[in-house]
Image 1: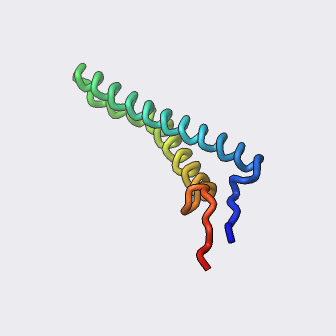
Image 2: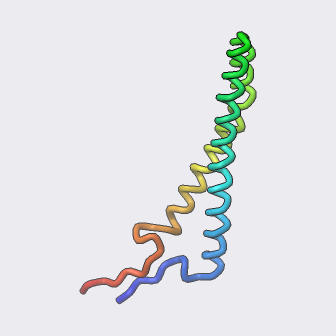
Length: 94
């Protein structure tokens, strides 16, 4: 007896593709935002302004952390579509 997966439904497959795209987009966004924080702080510290470096990090952190939070939530949603067999049909050995 083979089990059916959620991905056999075309609407769910499309939703999974959209969610996967959004997940990839948010991961790239938060990685770039983190890079902007590090590069900005490095430049400001190089100029000798530690206060500005802290202010830069505080100003940019909500974007990086927001992107990371969105990516985490989307990965949680994706785990339901991919499941333990990652969408493969599994035959029961009875």
